[in-house]
Structure formats: structure tokens, C-alpha cells
Amino acid sequence: MSSASIDMSSVSSGAVLGDGPRVVDFIALLKPRVMSLVVFTGFAGVMLAPGHLHPLLATVAILCIAVAAGASGAINMWYDRDMDAGMNRTRNRPLPAGRMNPADALGFGVVLAVAAVTVMGLAVNYVAAALLVLAICFYVFVYTIWLKRRTPQNIVIGGASGAFPPMIGWAAVSGDVSPASLALFVIIFMWTPPHFWALSLYRCGDYARVGVPMMPVVAGARETRKLVLLYTAVLVPLTLAPFWLGVTGIAYASAALVLGMIFLGLALRLWVTATDAAAKAMFSYSILYLFALFAAMLADASTATWMTS
Amino acid sequence: MTRNANGMDDQHKRQRSRNLALGGVLLALVALFYFITIVRMGGH
Image 1 (cartoon, rainbow over the protein chains, first blue to last red):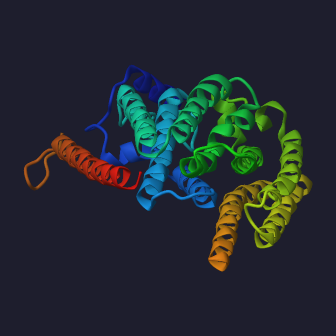
Image 2 (cartoon, helix red, strand yellow; image 1 turned 90 degrees about the horizontal axis):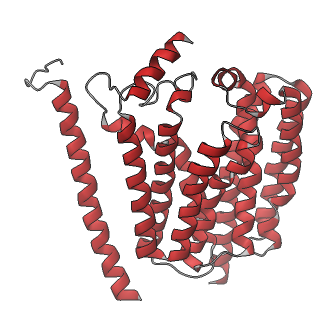
Image 3 (spheres, rainbow over the protein chains, first blue to last red; image 1 turned 135 degrees about the horizontal axis):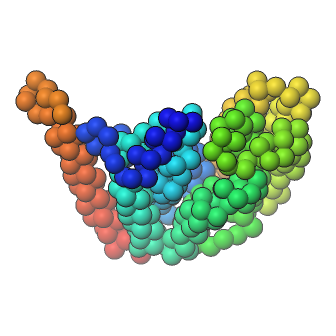
């Protein structure tokens, strides 16, 4: 705890240790690992939407989604720098490690967020730009500043920010919000709680130490495992929505069912065995699951397009 | 501050790599805006 206190004091004073930030520190602020999922689901939204968008503008739209996600991550790291210093998983980030001035991180995030929204509005369309603003504001103000330190429902409501990318990608092409793009939103929205709670089950000590009211800290591991199972059971039938709405065919529906049954099986195993290993397996599979679901949607939709052309 | 073989201290080395990265980003943006303008003016 004492090392965390030392880190926090140097961090809040803005003192930078060593020779200043490296380029890789600025890249680390963008949370590149989170970005890969954001880019992929945004890409899926672009590809699944009806209509046509020039490939360059489609690339710009995905780039804007990625940059906005990175910018939100940078602002989040600026706000949470005191907390990050107390957690093993995050204490080596550029701000808690003292390699970067907090004001630089905030400026970097704000400039990137403004740039991403401006370019999206000018190059693609204003609906996609407005959704991008909503996603950034949701992540920064609703999740990071308002909910994260106050309620165990933080990632349930705040998770909406991570669900926006396919909807934004869709709006970039079609210029609107439709039931089908809302279905993609709902899938990620419902996937987020079991994904994060599985992680927090074996990182519980970290969150408790810095006072983040994650579900296992507040309600206990047993209640969290029950909620993981409950959310997973609701999520699996919801993943069939793109099929019912005509976005994809039976191939996707079959893949979603098989993938969902495995996810449900892991949630059941976690409920029964109550081990860290089961929580880790659930967390690892959750990432693969979301990638695979959207990959299946893309494969199904492109096969259908190819067969009808 | 430590000096490397080229006589450049680490702080300047990091500053230089940051400047190069920023220059690269600015050049990429110029190219991007050029192509966006071409596409927007041509197709819509």
C-alpha cells in the first residue's frame, strides 16, 4: 500500500520521473488491446449495414471509431490514475508509473476525441458523429466519472459505451439507427457484464484494495457467479436477434447457438465449481465468443451477398 | 540524463522520436484529408 501511496502522490503532483514519455506510452494510453474488439465490431457494423459506402470512407469511419475509443481510454486513464496506482494490473501504466504528466494525457485524449468526431462528421455523416459523441460521453462521464466508483452496476450501465461501435459503423453506411443495429448494440451490452464479472472474480483483491465497488467486492463471489449465469442465459437467445431481423441467415444462427451453448456451459461450470480457473476460462472464452459471433455474422452476410450477386 | 554513443542524451532521443511520430501522424492526416476530399467531391 505504501508503494501505491508514493506512486499516487507523484502522479497527482504531475511530476514526471525519468526522461519523459516515450511514443509507446502514448500508444499505451489508447488501450490497444481493447481497441481491437472495438475495431472489429465497428467493422462488422459497416459490413452488415444495408447500402454502400466508399471503401476509403468506410476505412475512415472505422479509424474514427478506433481513435475515439483510444481517446476515451486516455481520458479514463487520466481520471483513474490514483486508482490504477493501487492495482497490480494497472500500476505500470504511463501515469501511475510516473512516466507522463497527467495534463499531457488529458490533452492527448481530448484532442483525439474532438478530431475523431470532427472527421466522422465531415467525411462520413452526422448521425455516426453524434453516436460517436454519445459513446465517448457515456464512457467518460457516465462510466468513468459517475458510476465506476459508486455502484456495482458500473459495468452493466457503463458497458453501453463499448456496445456502440457496431451501431456507429452501421450508421456510417446507412445514416440511421435501425432495429438491426440496436440488436448488435444489445448483444455487446448483455455480453459485457459476464465478461467483466468473470475477470473481477479472480481480480477481486485488486478492486477491493482501491475501493472500486465491483460486484464480487460488494455482493460476494457467489452472487456474482449467479449473475454471470443469469446474464449469459439471457444473452444466448438475444444473439439470435440478427437472424430473426433478417440481417443474417441460418448459418449464423447455428454458429451463435453452438458458441452460446459453450459460453453457457462455462458459466454453469463457474457456478458449480466456483474456482479461479473456471473464472479465467469464462473470461478468456468471452473474448473469443464475441469475436466469433461477429465473424460468423460477417461470414454469413458475405456468403449471402455472394450467392445473390 | 545519460548520453548514448552518438552523444545524444536520452531525453533528446525521446523528444526526437516523439517529434518524428507527430510528423508522421500529420503527414498521414494531410494524405487522408486529400483523399477524403477527392472521394467526397467525386462521388456525391
